[in-house]
Length: 341
Image 1 (tube, rainbow, N blue to C red):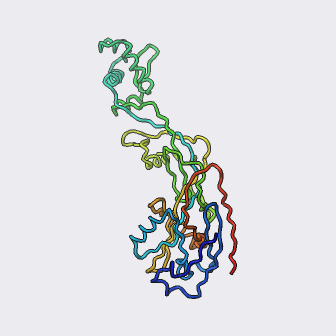
Image 2 (image 1 turned 135 degrees about the horizontal axis):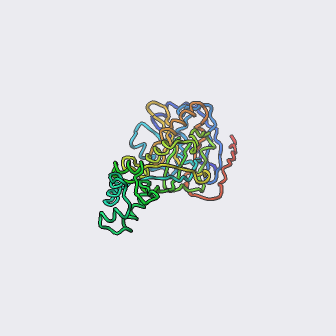
Image 3 (image 1 turned 60 degrees about the vertical axis):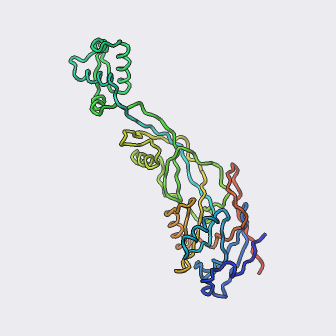
């Protein structure tokens, strides 16, 4: 069913009624998507005030509370459009290797010190005799230090410290065997950032209109495999996963991609706000209540270049728009039927 025809008195801000020419006309058309009916405005100007777009508010019911909050906090702003969309991003499983130190225990420290100060270097049996300990206890501890690349045994059984062991001895700790963790790299071309997280994003499609059908989202992010280790370390540290904490000696030393990137979908909200004092509009992209500055600036720039037309946002129905995930690809083709004049 086509949306109800609205007169200007229902939607127009009283303070602006006089600024809208009486001859302003809107050629409405009905656009049908999966669960959303919208009216596409056919106007010749992108100026929202001149076109009278404020007469045709398009508010997603699920965003009503946020719209009310925005208008309450900013008396000079009127929300004209509040719509939910989804867009593509890439998710890649990544395996990272982490080295982490620990303090030497008393016996380990004594064995390392003995391997430095004794001439000739001692054997495990000699150290056991000096300490009055069982040979097996001393031998197992020395073998652990060998695994940490801190010691090595000569052919005659003497214990010799390695250059790496000398460095560890100065620091008072030993590097544990590397741990391997799996995390997900999320490449978001719209927000233009690469983030890491433990949990995977849902692979199903969001049952919302695809923003990519309204605007071309180019991927300017470098390929994950092209990043240097220092780049990966900085990104992992910024993610706050506790995997790369240099001040604690915890360092990501290697990474590799597991499989190919997978396509995921993320939901965002697009707002068009009218400043009733300055008579200009503002484009905002939000995730929940957070304003995404880069994405907002991108759409503003594309609109100025006439590569993104706000008129195509149209009017949505006032029925509740649900968000769900499905494995089947939803139909995204749109059919347009012109209303008779």
